[in-house]
Image: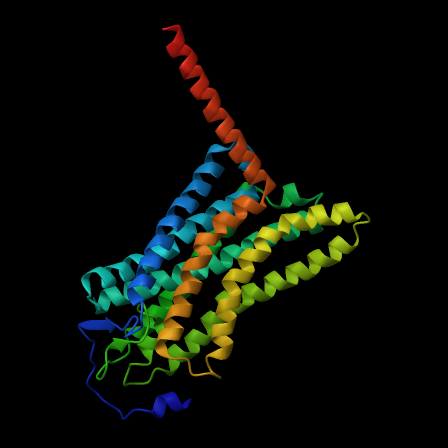
Length: 330
């Protein structure tokens, strides 16, 4: 048994706090500007991701497994930022850092749940690119819309089950000392470390879930790109290799933006003692910037998306001309 199990004396009194206090940013210069920046980020995230979802839904040419996965990622981005930023804005506007015990558990579940689904969504997009480049002739028979829906549903179920266990384990903890959570939301790690009874199962579950939902997807994504690199090397023409690789660039940028900050945080945290404000700012940015940038990158770096946008605006201009002609005739 780990030292966590013997760190505190046995206490038969079980205490569930009525409230937790979210520390947020403490005494940081220009903290108000940071909250305003997060609010602007949230608005841009909403507009960009809704635009991508509507565009894919309205364009028949984008009704395929790849863009089903892209629209799913856009929806998850909407959910993940909505789980984080509105509560931060509420804390900023009303200077109230308190959250009830049950609301804290709900906040913990949804933030971690949507982050987990986001991680698996990037794996799903890697799977799509792997099939398209390594098995181009079998791609349409293997990767159908119905199978993509099943894969997406499985990602939601895996995340829901694992995160439910994580949150339920919090309910066995007793909080008889501080109830101040050193984070910008009811983060699992800072919450369970406040407990005064044995939190070793929570520690083990944190390790397992992080491995399952962060590092295993990242490992599979990197492995898929090794296979893609081998497949590209077999293409005889440089133009063909470049064209095939171009379909992966958007996804590579998304993977880098999402996983690199997480990897740095998880690897560096045990070695370096970061000040609370530095850790909170870096974590909040890594959770809010990728959802804002994902739709922008996919739109600008994907030929099919740009072509669909052009077609959409051409149709709008055509309708406007017809309306103007009708008005002139009247």
